[in-house]
Amino acid sequence: MPYGEADVVVTLFTETLGRVSAMARGARRSGKRLGGALEPVHGVRVELDERPGSDLATLHDARVLRARTFLTTDLDRLDAAGHALRWVRRAAPPRKPEPELWAEVVDLLDHLDDRTDAVAPRTHLAASGLRILVALGWGLQLESCVRCGRACGAERAAFVDAARGGLLCRACGGSGRVVPADARVRLVAAAAGKDATLVDGDVALAFALVDEVLATHAGLEA
Ligand SMILES: [Zn+2]
Image (cartoon, rainbow, N blue to C red; front, side, top):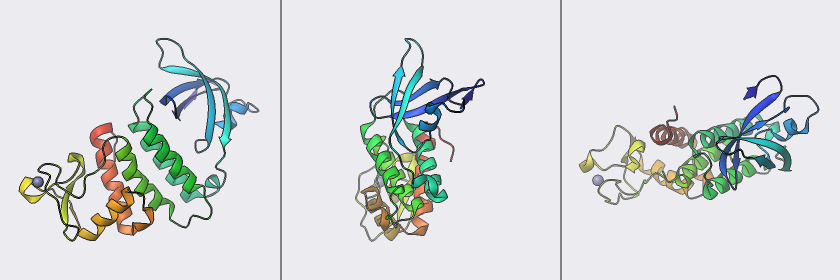
């Protein structure tokens, strides 16, 4: 976010502190190296000064450690990365290290930067969204009822209420959303790391489920 004439307030997702906001003074002046290091998809080492009683740190230095330049040349990859980072910005709690979320985001960005990776960026994003929920403690339970715990066979369609945490059996009230058996199996596989399992229709379904969960827990509008 631009601030004043030359400054920028940046939101950083950091390995050691989690989500942090910081003031980058002079970042919009041409020729300042800070600005160049603050493109959102790269891995950057930052030096922050924290002021007691202030939520806003001061960014002193930022150096790119892991440039993801291929990612920035492809609009679909860039879109997927931006979408994931918006999820993180809104859902990650401030000033709380989130190692599992950190690992997931780094992994997604690395996949999106890999020119030999043939899986569609949106497919990676959808699968990563399911794992981001897991990392935040909001992972969807899709193999048994969230209320009574009864297992649901892989060959059966199921009611899914993402806001309630996943599968809700008929006896427990069901939900307005029915997920076919095959799609449910693929979503479970994708959440476990098999991104390429997802077919086109699953990708939209996964986005809808992720957005519902985040709207419930993080106030994120779909
Ligand atoms: Zn039940």
